[in-house]
Image 1 (spheres, rainbow, N blue to C red):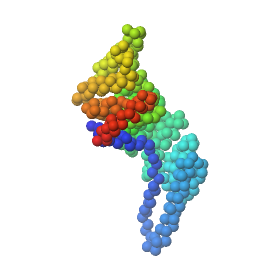
Image 2 (image 1 turned 135 degrees about the vertical axis):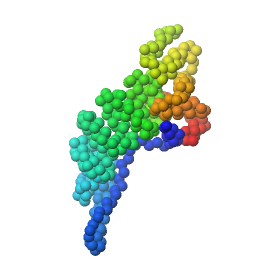
Image 3 (image 1 turned 90 degrees about the vertical axis):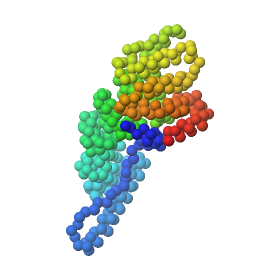
Length: 363
């Protein structure tokens, strides 16, 4: 079972960026020397280590300011103090990757991977991305697969593997990779967004809607949020055509084959058609979105008993809990804040409702 409440509690402060860890670890070596010799060596070792650390820190500062060539000079100087340093080799590889010199980047990253010490996961990721950018997608896939054997609980490796496969048209395989990554970290926004796109391409409307909804819960206020809202609206009215004021046509072929979501799919089409009738013409689009969303989640909630898998244990489990709360309206406005002034005005005028919704998320 997915730990829904633990995930949702941290949504407001979820950080999906991966930061590099620049801390170095001193390596102890067995030295069969006299105590006097140890006393002589250690000060020089510490001086060298301190110098290398300073050079790396300076290189990182230069890299972060966009001065990549000068950063590389610092890393190369640091490498003179320890040619096998995984930290320095990784920084050289990563900076070359950022500069677009993928061949040189891989040269350094391969050494990090061969060392099998620190920065191994980061090296695999940068190497896979380098290969993919060079047009060597098969090699990139192999690299990510090797990395997953080393780090089977790393959701970003599954995401990168899934993204590469998606771009190669390996849709089914990509879906499994992305779903595995989400099972490890449901709060990774881009994985949910990509899953929505994958299911949309497969013609799986309900699954796509669920993934986009969860993405918008995690990331409601960006350019991607606007794109997700546009996709979501098109899915809500998929296969529905208004011929004239009295005739609305539903293309039943667009509903796909019979499955666990067939009844919800049909209901959503009927709701979409109903939205175009005279009875609902005075309702705002946001009001209809709220009503349709509540109806969809209610149908799915009724069907979830005994169902397993990502769709039921993550998405529908969460939205069933949301239905039991008094915050569905606040939720719909929260995820729609990039639509326009109406939604933003409602949020600003209903601060109390929004505060209660945020508190519920964190409970």
